[in-house]
Image (cartoon, rainbow, N blue to C red; front, side, top):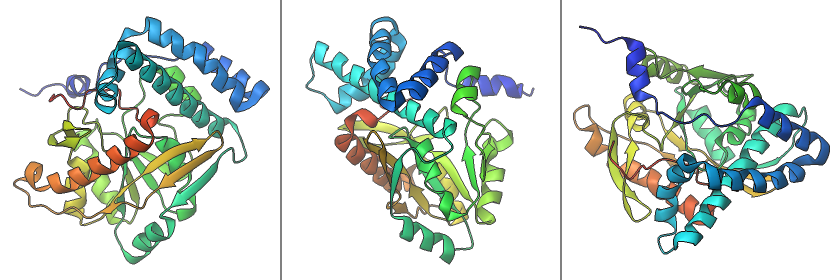
Length: 307
C-alpha cells in the first residue's frame, strides 16, 4: 500500500513555531526607512529580550549550540549568549530585508576565493555544488555570486510562514536563481543532476539533515550528525563541493568566503562511511567559523542528537 506523498513530506518537515508576522515586518521596514540600519538594529534589543523571556521553544532550540560553544558558562551567562545570538540573527535578517527593499548596493561584499571559483567553473563542463550552512548570512552571500554569470538552483523547502515568504522573499528569488523542491519525487535528485550536467550551480544546505541520512563527525568537542547527500551527489556527478560562508564584519560589510573546495569520492555501497573524511573537513571549516564568529551560528537544532 502506497503512503500518501503529503504525509511523507509532513513527517520529514521539522515542526517549528511560526515566528514573524506582517505587522512586525512592517515596523522593521519603517525603522529602516526612517532611521536606517542602526535604528532597526536598536529595536532588536527589545524584540530579542521578548524572545528570551516568553519564547521557550526558541531558547531551547538555541541551547545545544551555546552549550557546546561555551561549555564553561553558568546559567545566567548561557542566557546572555543566547540573547546575543538572537540579536545577531535579527541583524542579518534585517540586512536580508534591506537588500530586497533597496535598489542600490547596501553592503560592501568582499569575496574571498572568487578567482579560484571562476577558474573551476571555466575549466569544467559540469557544474558545482555550493554547500551553504546556517552560519552567517548565506542569502547575502548568494548575491555576491551574481558576477559569475551562472544560473543557480536552490534546494529548499517552501517557507511555511506567509509573512516571511512575502517580506524576506524566501523561495521567490529573482534573476538567475531557481528553486528545486526536495519534497518532489526522489527528493529533487534528478533535477539536481540535470542542472549539474548542464554546468549550473546547485546550492544545498549542508548542516541540517531534515530527516535525511547522516554520518557522525566531530564538531565542537562532541560527535554531531551531518547529512552526506550533497557529497554523495557530488561524488556521483564528479563535480566539486564549494563551501559558502558569509561573515558580518560590521554594519555595512560582509566577507563572503568560497576558498574551501572539496572533491568527495565514494562507491555506491558504503557512502555513510566513505564520505566521512569530507564531512569531517566540512565540520572543521564550520567549527573554525564558529570559533571566530560565535554569534553567527544559527543552527537552532540539536545536531549532536541522532534523529
